[in-house]
Length: 148
Image (cartoon, rainbow, N blue to C red; front, side):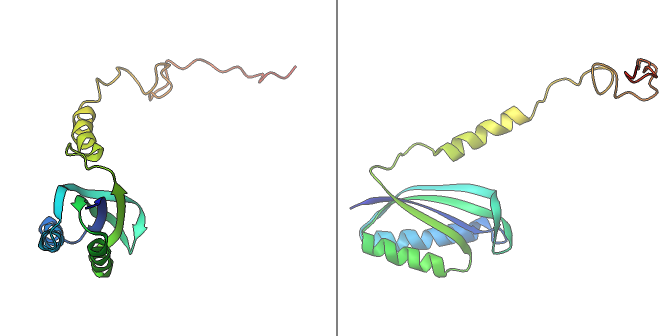
């Protein structure tokens, strides 16, 4: 059977359990037909690049499927009719990688890097002192402005 990867985005106002229910329905259909869901990843509630049907965020889910192409077309049709699904993309792949996707592995790394930003610089806003109030360290400006 051919292998596919499907990513779909669900509306942000539904819960994660409702997204899981959509995936469970897909899984039941595929397993009844003799296929298999080899990979299932919930990427979380993420910001969209642009608004889709008045939504700024969406629940992202990746599925690695082993399914006949006729059943895949039917699943895509049902997902496109589902009002909770904003977007859907399916690609045929040679193999399904069992390791976590780059989206999940990057998600864990980002949180650790952002938690510590380093010590604050002492003094004012700039090293030259221009951002300080009072201005006692500011150099005097000349009155001639370069005119001769």
